[in-house]
Length: 450
Image 1: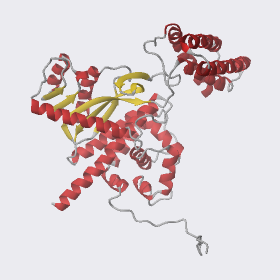
Image 2 (image 1 turned 45 degrees about the horizontal axis):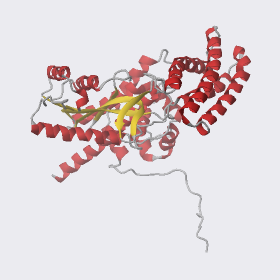
Image 3 (image 1 turned 45 degrees about the vertical axis):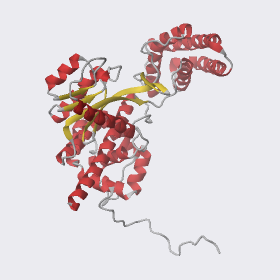
Image 4 (image 1 turned 180 degrees about the vertical axis):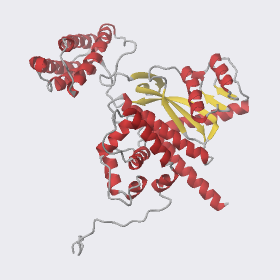
């Protein structure tokens, strides 16, 4: 007897479904202040769009899509599929009583328009909701720094030069005019570079042999770079996407070449070395961790508020900002969002300085829990020290959570630093949204049981 029993009647593709009231997406949809978020998105769009033509975006549905992507890491195509076929996702986007949907391009364009700053402001709205329900205590603040690693290969000199040649072959091949004459030169150089890279990886033994192959590779790449740079400098217009990419990568490589040669000669890495051709803002962050001394990406500051909700932002301009500077920036961000200084503030010894202690006192922090350096004394008593240490330890746990696969803070599938910042803010937003739903449910259950 066959186990496969086909249906006698054709199944309907129209489904009637009842959602549970306690479903995460249903609860979130009811808790969020969509009016405030729509006003925020409209303001950002008005500031960025030069000429508002065509239909206005479906703000409510698109903001629902943003929330969906925040609480559950996914691609834009996956978001499109869920919003089309998954009932709770449609409820979150306010599309249950409609046959409309959102395509992945529209969601992507909305995310780019909103930007990392827009997602950060959306997070501010969520924290405001949590505060209204008594779930956030802004009188407590514990801060720490972390690295958002980029999804890039290890940035060694051989790999960077090989990447440059591959990009040149790709972009020059899509251009015409004066660049038609060097396509053959680039193709031959790429073949030579591939052979040298293979030689470096497989056959060059020891530092001397590797340095010898590296220098040959350097001179081959430099010749191609000089030729392309001269063509760009001749005033040839490169307005196409390929042309702009060629111009940008050639400019970055011009800064990188003087950093590569000293390493090949001395073995020492140049200060402020560029580690990626298309994301030149990335940098190496020395962490000193076991098994991972250096991380490549962007440095973030994470604020944990009383109640466990998070704020996050790139430190300074995203460059090599010190923990001492971030210590005060963390307090300033907190004041900006909540209009008051925290009464209790905790930070590790990286932020300790007499100037920071005085600034914290001036701002109005009562219990300054910045761990002291050397023989310096704490500013708080032992009982408060133990409390601050316990609370600060939880910041690491929160950082580990946003770096988990469900949120995707770490190694996001992004091809620019602005996209990385967007993904980072989205992960923090998702963490806070999920926490809002959980804490609200616990508070409701406690009230019902009491």
